Image 1 (tube, rainbow, N blue to C red):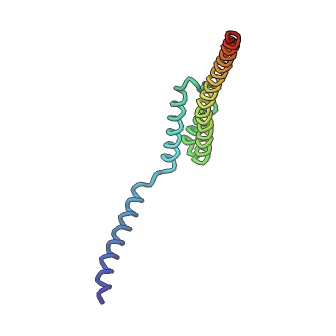
Image 2: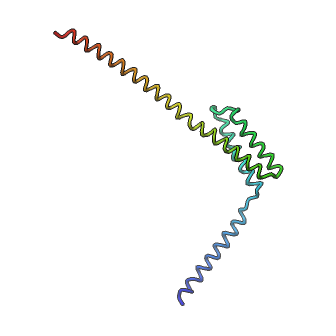
Image 3: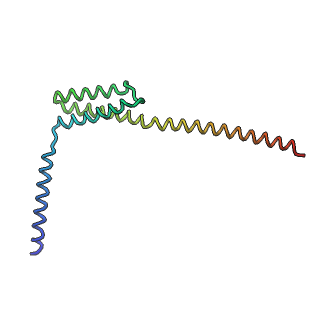
Length: 143
């Protein structure tokens, strides 16, 4: 049976791969404390980055800092569920601040465009007035 010969190396290879993958999965297991601590650190980094922006006030970041401090305290008490919820709250608050920052430039661009439109409309009105005046002068000079 020729198909059996080709099947055995394939089964051996599949077995070796599955054992290797399961060994890798065991090596990469992260403790709940490490997982939550990493999540808190990521959100704290985002908070520090947003704090550098002049468009973000300390008042806006205060609830984020409270949530991150509560998460750190919960990790210290081994209350990972509460720490995870507080980290999620901090993430949502930071996402909201980031969304407001992303929207603000488009509003300022729209206002700048609106000012340009107003200026151009004013120039058009002035030019039309000048054309009308010039036509009137030409009509008076023509016999």
